Each structure stands twice: as structure tokens, then as C-alpha cells.
Image (cartoon, helix red, strand yellow):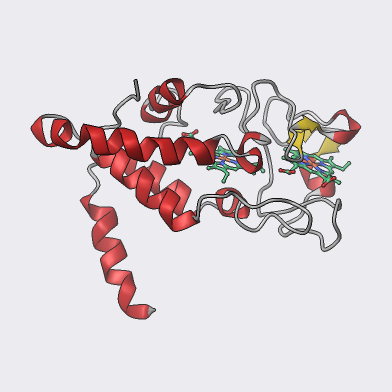
Length: 189
Ligand code: HEC
Ligand code: HEC
């Protein structure tokens, strides 16, 4: 297990800070587009969409129904004074089914950087993810880092009793993201 680490570090370092461009990118654009289909499948999974809605309202379940108690993310994404996410959501999943799931810093994106996944086409999401004005100011390296290590992302693969984990294995998702970024973030047609 320990011996795999240097390879991972090298692999991460190979991803350019900006989306690659020029001939190399052209040569791999097709592979990048194919990889984005896998990325998109994850981004559209209910475990992710429920926290990346079109409005300020988190969703619940595989059907994306409205969150109980009329919970809203508010400006900050962390809830409003009387109803903070942290009132109910802790650092880890509550053990019972239908009790609040949890991960460190559980919240919605802020209103100023809404990071909407819900209802976005693959082409729209590719543009959004590659654009630092729309992706939270992240470089491609930071984007890869986020999907590799962020606790809210990782939660999608261990969402607690009674919730369906994301169907694409996490390493496959990370590899697909890396291929897409290295190919110059091609927008699927
Ligand atoms: C509990 C809510 C929550 C869940 C669940 C969640 N996210 Fe997020 N996500 C956020 C927040 C909040 C941010 C913004 C973090 C920041 O900028 O500090 C974010 C940011 C992101 C970003 C970087 C910004 C962008 O859109 O380019 C990506 C990519 C992302 N999430 C992917 C996912 C994926 C994939 C899943 C499911 C496996 C997921 N998220 C599940 C809340 C969540
Ligand atoms: C009053 C308590 C309470 C507050 C406040 C609250 N939640 Fe929840 N939340 C819950 C409970 C309970 C569940 C689990 C419901 C179930 O599984 O049937 C849940 C589930 C969720 C889910 C669904 C996960 C999934 O994929 O099924 C998301 C997303 C979520 N909450 C986000 C938030 C966010 C973001 C905030 C703050 C803006 C917040 N919640 C505030 C109690 C709360």
C-alpha cells in the first residue's frame, strides 16, 4: 500500500496547472470527452446533486425531494440563523437510517458561487468546471485535489445506512477527471 504513494504523487504532478492546450490536447480530446461521460455520471448522482441544486434548497433521497423543515442554505450555504446545517448534521453519519448524514463542514455552496449541477447538460458542466469564475476559483490541480480528497465528495461513497452510494467507483471517477483535465477540458458535443 505504501509503495503506491509516490506513483500517485507523480501522477498528480503531471496534470498541468491550466487545461492543456495545443497538439497534445488535440490528440487526446476524444479520450477526454469519453472520460467526461464518467465524470458527468458522478456529478449527476443524487448524492452530489442534492448538495448542488439550482436554488438554495438542499434535496434528499434518490428522488431529490425537498429537504424536510424547509431548510435553506441561505447566503453562506451553511443555513440561516435559526436553522444551521450544523444543528443537525455532524462530522459523521448518524447511525440510524433517516437520521442526518454527516461529514466535516456539511453545507451547500454559497449563493455567490452556487456551483449548480442540477439540470446542467454535460456540455454546460464541462464549461462550468473548467472556468475559474464558475468553479470556485480552482486551477485544474485544485479541482483534481478537491474530487480526490474533499470529505463532502468522499461522503458520496459512504453516505450512511439507507442511502445509495455513487455508482462509479471513486478511483475510476478521479482517473476520469484527470484524463479530462489533461486533455484540455474538452466540451462534449
Ligand atoms: C454536503 C453537501 C455536499 C455534498 C454531499 C457534495 N458537495 Fe460538492 N461541494 C459542496 C460545497 C459546499 C462546495 C464548495 C466548497 C468550497 O468552495 O469551499 C462543493 C464543491 C464541489 C466541487 C468544486 C467546485 C466545482 O463545482 O467545480 C466539485 C467538483 C464538487 N463539489 C463535486 C462533488 C461531487 C462529485 C459530489 C458527490 C460525490 C459532491 N460534490 C457532493 C457541497 C457538497
Ligand atoms: C432540522 C435538522 C436538519 C437541518 C437544520 C438540516 N438538515 Fe439536512 N437532513 C436532515 C435529516 C434528518 C436528513 C436525512 C433524511 C432522510 O434520510 O430521510 C437530512 C438529509 C440531508 C441531505 C440528503 C442527503 C442525501 O443525498 O440523501 C442533504 C443534502 C442535506 N440534508 C443537506 C443539508 C444542508 C446543506 C443543510 C443546511 C443548509 C441541512 N441539511 C440542514 C436534517 C437536517
